[in-house]
Length: 341
Ligand code: F6P
Image (cartoon, rainbow, N blue to C red; front, side, top):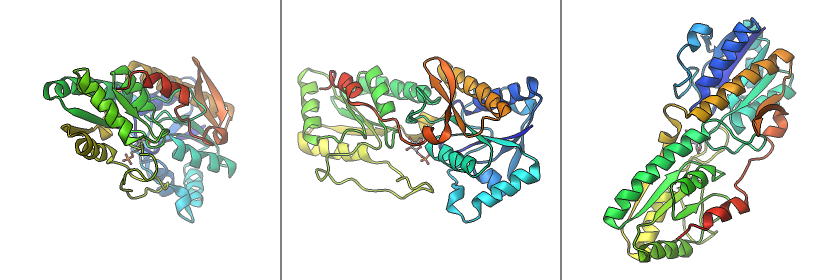
């Protein structure tokens, strides 16, 4: 078989480990050949390819980013997007695609499968918000980066008796905020699933100062105040209709300073969370997803996505995998709340 591979959406540590495992098993065990498509769905739409053999994947296991490049290109945004993909695959003699991505990239993969294009999906996102898999790779690395940053902010917050607010990624789901905040002992964790009350946040801040410590607030970028209580600016939209977020930490900085008179500073971790070398867990998970994805293509299991269930990698239907986001449940947030204030 000839198999096309692409990485779409926001990059994350572990993408290269998946690509390496796909190519190593696909060539060494099955004798398949590969072509890489550049920059997500842009590659097959524009016939933008990169050679993908054993040499290309040597040494890439620990490297962050993706050797294939990525983008948020949406083929369904252009009238002839799908037709162009079909033409490219036919022209190159590609029998099947492996799409490595999050909800958007895999949503496109599910639609292409429904239209008869053979495609298998591998879930990736630092947000860990795909419902069909226990974990996505990239998440553990992002959480560790955020945890280390929060550890560091604790010491400078104490020195200056300041409120330090750390904004982490997480547009719809607060997994990074929850895990890193709990791991690093945050005093308040604010997530998109639970609109926050600014008065309560300020009360936690005062309580923390009263116990002679400086408060650290971890806020997911998608967290929002209870409707109508504060004004937060909306950003521009990307090709999948998502608002580009950034700014909730600075809103909190101003509000907390204004309401409590305490010196406050915001830190936005941003894309630092997506960069650099993956953790051991993410390399392990990414490698296993790659091995199982090439098995799935070999078996002709188009329309499936690899999923981690416990310690097993299983195939789930792509359509089901992208139907709903995995959000932080009440009971997990309640565990974190024990440490607020
Ligand atoms: O989906 C992954 C993610 O990192 C989100 O957490 C974040 O909201 C978004 O991507 C940022 O996207 P971009 O890299 O396009 O700014």
